[in-house]
Amino acid sequence: MQDGSYYRTSQRILSVFFWKIFNNRNKYNEKNIVGFLSFAMMSIFAAADILTGLWGKELVINDIVFNSFVIVTLGTFGIAEAGKIFGKNEFTEKY
Image 1 (tube, rainbow, N blue to C red):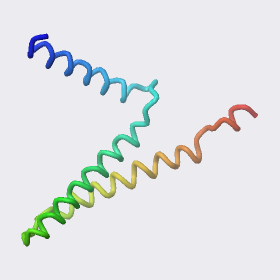
Image 2 (cartoon, rainbow, N blue to C red; image 1 turned 180 degrees about the vertical axis):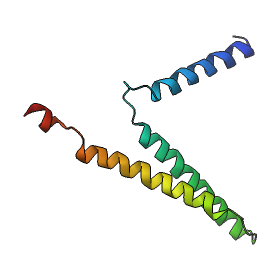
Image 3 (spheres, one colour; image 1 turned 180 degrees about the horizontal axis):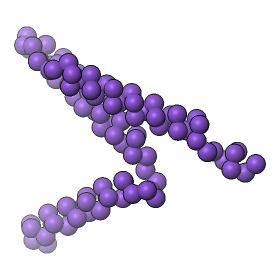
Image 4 (cartoon, one colour; image 1 turned 90 degrees about the horizontal axis):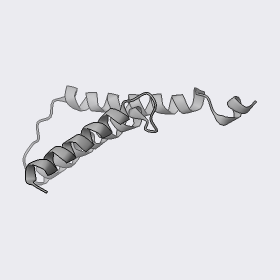
């Protein structure tokens, strides 16, 4: 396989996967995906802050950016859990 065709094939697979995630009929919960990515960014910021603190330097992160990730994380996981609690479940569908 040539280098260019491998790149195009992998790019096509990723684009198909991302379209499937945001399709209405899928098995993925988009809110959990967005929440996890936001949590991952917060964790990366925290690790970078700790590492630069150990090296004796200050990592300057705007509070608005970090707080935005916190709000997105809490919001998406809260919405997902509220959907599980107040949404349809097997018991209400059967009876």
